[in-house]
Length: 516
Image: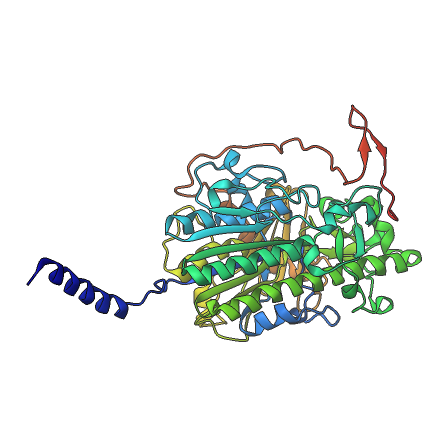
């Protein structure tokens, strides 16, 4: 055979067999993770039994998976809570109990959730707020993020930040820590969270095409103050029908709880007036804004989940939905967070995905630090030794199963545990500043402190032993965590509202008017 005929025959053979090979990207069989976290979202959702809040997409997600009715954060403040669940450790172990502390300055050797997925070949992507952000001043930046957690980060910046000067607020030009709200012009896609949802949709499309395994973390900035959402979401609510709680607001009530508990619900002095009958309409306007913003967040969650299904990735993706902590809306005379009451400690927590029973519910006491080991179990990855949380997979298989008897939360010098029925809170070492005891069977609002009721002395003693045991374990240095350091918050610069002008010394000399 002539050389050129041999070469020609070889090419034909290669062409024939080459055409029989699939030219597609090899499908990855390992499960993916879509982690969605809202900011300052309590359990005022339809799936949690709230009669007014409109949350069809979150409710649908709950109907497709398991909803935890008794889930609690480990520190009811953004930064410490997020550092806690991203490392699977308690706040005493992360050494982080304030905002604006960088994770690597307290536990530099820790392996975070996203970092662990990266170590196993996943692509770890953050969109929006996962670690602490000064909200809204840090929108559009990476703020107090951890660069070792991610392969890629995306920082959305929307109309809500650009038009910040239009926002109503109880204190001029104060938003993040002050009640503030706006029924905004424009569309969902123009808002920061709408942009974040669009970015998530684009990422899902890319992962669908590439077949690459992913840990996609999408952090919403709402319903954290300022409560900003397009006007159409406000129109969904009848403001006059929104109830404002008037129990637990007087001095007589405050005398029934320890001093530090009373301080926690009176820390926002300018907001106490909202619980007076004379300010009912203002309180209803603000609470309506929170509900409207919650519904707006729900719509963005719906957009992301719709894309997940359209791509077919839902068949191989576990979805987790939660919040960093709960939120008071006038209960105990308090608005916002930072208490050891159920309003601030309890969070929504939903898992959905392949093999997870649809429509399941659990009242087992669980903690946000359980997310880390649960995701490791679901994806077949070994969790680092420092992870203290417990996998919730046994509860997926048996909804009545309990991984622990109580959920632990710390705030400043107080600790609290919530069992299936009771809450006990202890203030300072050995309870020197007092105890609280609440029976959720008869007092879900936690307004009747039974700690000094002799009829509950035996129960109180038993729960004292339980909370002491929980605290003693939560303060131990975890195996494998590496170095630990105490670190103060970094000094942050004041928020700059777009459109305002300042002199050379940083004094604001011009306020952009809201009607401009």
